[in-house]
Length: 530
Image (tube, rainbow, N blue to C red; front, side):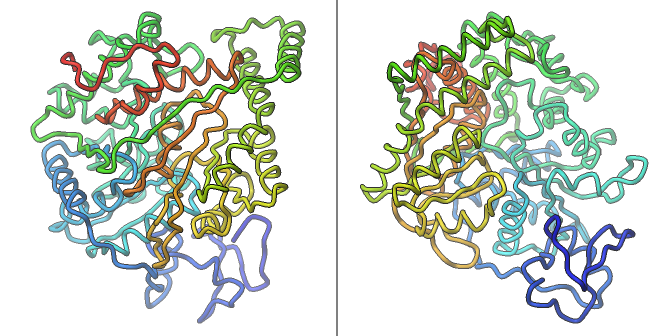
């Protein structure tokens, strides 16, 4: 049940570690909180009951030819390398292809168990994957869909594996690109130290640079014919192989581009392209990629000029902050300097809220639905949503404590034509979406506004994929304030987005068009060197 919510007939049971109602049927007020098939709570519930709980009410989904092709190639990669990377463009159907591949790969394994690790928010992503499994058919496999936060429950008191799986599907693999606690948990569950459970890594954006492919360490070792011990530190191994990387002094265990690569983005592209070729040229290929048949997204950068009063306000606060803290405006300022950059990115975006709102309202008047992507709540999400509603337009709020699932449906059905969202992945906002319950989203074209440029190119690429997916083309506008720290953030984001896109073997044309605006050199998709 939700935090701080109670019910007189629900008790906490410490042994399985759950709140539970004991009775023949859930009271109506508890039905929304009942367990769902393919989840940890349902597994616990079924272990106590004589009959399994109810199935998921989902429409049957038929795989398209492109999804069947991807599934077949995944199976071949798993059989050859014990690992496969599924890096198709967002919205092509990676989820269905991964489910189909698991069914074929484990068809002859009795009582096979599959773990699917999904992205946050779990309330949306777990339900989405569970509905997809039911829609395709579970093939008689024992599926468990889990968020990264639940992985620890799969380990014993001393960190040993409590339950072994026959296949792990890591959705949005880029979430495990840093040596964090959840990355180490997934490595333990996948039993890296014992030769690794077969893994399907699913993502449209592997990382900003090849050192971030942490989950792919066993695969990289295998395709190069090397020992896994050589790849336990992916970044160190790549440096030894001549890649332009250096340890990240602000984040122990991470690596970043060398100074030479920062000055010349083509060095970054060559490095990313070389690692991508290792995977793609293996026989059979260890990476499966399909471009979106509806083409790459159209991305346009729009620099907004603050008026005199706004720019003076921005500059005054910047000067005052530097005077008090003695911090220079550089990338290498350390923790305090980075806090300053974040603060002034927010300040710049707050000063141009009216520009974004005006653009959104004009698109609504043209019959379009608008998705506004933000990173921060108080300086972006709240003032934009409030201004939209003050203009008489209903606005979905997919951020903070708002009910993400309910707000998403309101936008998708057209009841709220504008959506302000901080979520970057694992959520669908495209036109004509076929929902698990059989309903279809509205057919109004989607327009995306990236209100706050992020330093993460992965986040930028994922944001665009919320609407440009499943056959629906959706243009996006990257907005920033000229002459402020936002302009630098936008440039860094475009560089990172180029690398993140190239890492998956995808076309960089969408971001290549924008790169010229910021003076970024980038080789074309057809360059012979690649």
